[in-house]
Image 1 (tube, rainbow, N blue to C red):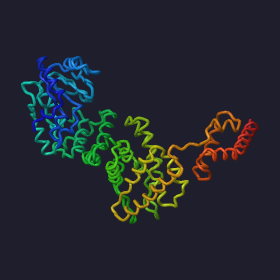
Image 2 (cartoon, one colour):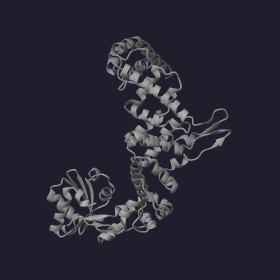
Image 3 (tube, one colour):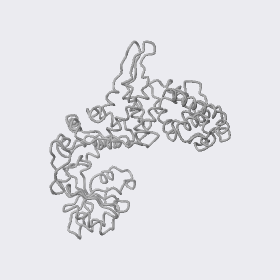
Image 4 (tube, rainbow, N blue to C red):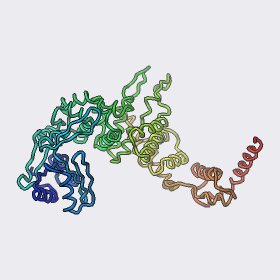
Amino acid sequence: MNLAEHFPPLLKELGDLADREGISLYVVGGFIRDLLLAEDPAQVNRTDLDFTVEGDAIQFARLVKREFKARGMVVYRRFGTAMVQLEEYKLEFVTAREEWYVEHSRKPRVKKADLKSDLSRRDFTINAIAVGLNAANWGKVYDPFNGREDLQRRIIRTPLDPEMTFYDDPLRILRAIRFATRLRFKIEERTKEAIRKMAPRLEIVSNERITDEIFKILAARKPSIGFKLMDELGVLPYVFPELVEMKGVEQRQGFHHKDVFLHTLKVVDNVAEVSDKVELRFAALMHDVAKPRTKRFDEKAGWTFHGHDEIGARMMEGIAKRMRLPNDVKNYVQKLIRLHLRPIFLATEEVTDSAIRRLIVQAGDDLDDLLVLCRADITSGNPKRVEQHLKNFDFVMQRVHEVIEKDKLRAFQSPVRGDKIMEVCGIPPGPLVGKIKKAIEEAILDGRIPNDYDAAFQYLLEIKDQFLQEADTEKSAGRKEK
């Protein structure tokens, strides 16, 4: 393949600029890798581009910004790197360099070097391929570590000694697993052994960077590949100890429970087949996180995990803090963990409109995601059992849609607002207003009154005296105690 035929016109313009300045410029990394792998090169992302400069990358980036009237530029002077935002393009220019590391840091010290030295410092051979952009070498491929051969062999391998590669920058351990997951490649054996040996070095990597890699693995077509690799290579204890606790199956008196770790990965893959939403995939990874801590054996019922939904939601507080998750992601995952058993329970009992309404209101805007998770959670080695559970679940989904159509409860709130309650009852803002409003909502959810203003207002007139009398009684009791 003539790679240059598939380059965006911008690369020729950058090469011409480099020629005028007497600078050697190369495009490197993921763009070249993905072009070499692509069945349809037109589908490759060509807006996020990395360049190696034999010269001063920061000075060249400033020139690019000025010549092309780019709107933004960020400089990392210590590493000889600059990033330029040019229309839809994100261009990163790096001075060709060598790196070395101190023991307790993954931040390198650098010095200028030539192209081969620069490619040698890259994480994997498949990312250590460069293509010339100057007129004299336009389109020429530089592949000193046989990255193209590794692409054909579908393996992940480091350009230099893998132990030193992972010792210097242990985040590359997770990157190896991420590329193996995304590309469906094998990790070469020496590289695997180095990962096993260097896994404890992950303790020096920031939680934010680990979280970023975990979410990138979750974004793959089949995320379970990555988590199984983490387990196989001894990485899980250093990046996600809660998943380690899920492993194992116990047998007692003829009762056994399935391996929670493998079940969880199956659920994640099931979600990934129908949704690209990475937060939902993460919720699937977390939905049974408390099962190991709630596991009990009942002589009659066998293994139980009572309360694992609520306890799992509470565990997310600490997990989210460690992973530096935004509050909206934490709250979303907690909600799905808390509710993930509800649709299944509804499938095993006579489903009333009231029960369905409560589920709809509690799930709110995340109802569809909850239902995707619950359906994905139906896993078993027994096809007849799966078929029956799916039938039950489909029945619940049908009832959910019926109630939504009937009551239009997706954005449910009491039709009678707080200001009207205060006006009718002659009371100031306070807890009593909330109690009366909640009573109206409960009556609608229970199906005792329709979800419309007139019915809710009439109900307010019926119950207001009772609430006002109770409030007066509580006040009188409080005065007597004083």
